[in-house]
Image 1 (cartoon, rainbow, N blue to C red):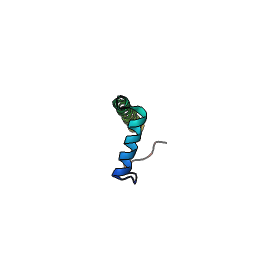
Image 2 (image 1 turned 30 degrees about the horizontal axis):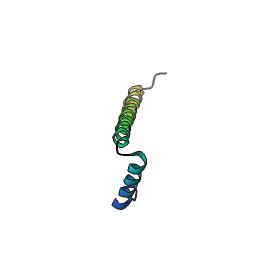
Image 3 (image 1 turned 90 degrees about the horizontal axis):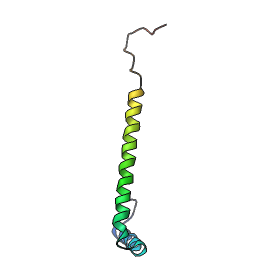
Image 4 (image 1 turned 180 degrees about the vertical axis):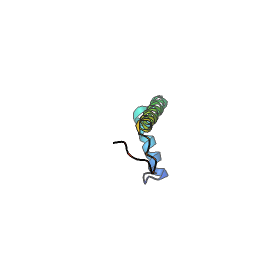
Length: 66
């Protein structure tokens, strides 16, 4: 994952724990989860909107309207 091993991830987690304290980590994780949920929801809404706005493809052999 991003070229980081277990020791590097453990060190990063330890630094975060020392900076923010054990009581703040669940709050941060909850906020991150909500942000990801909102991002995925917005992404899904945009893709639905794009698919709905696409005109249907012309059938082969049909004449264009002049």
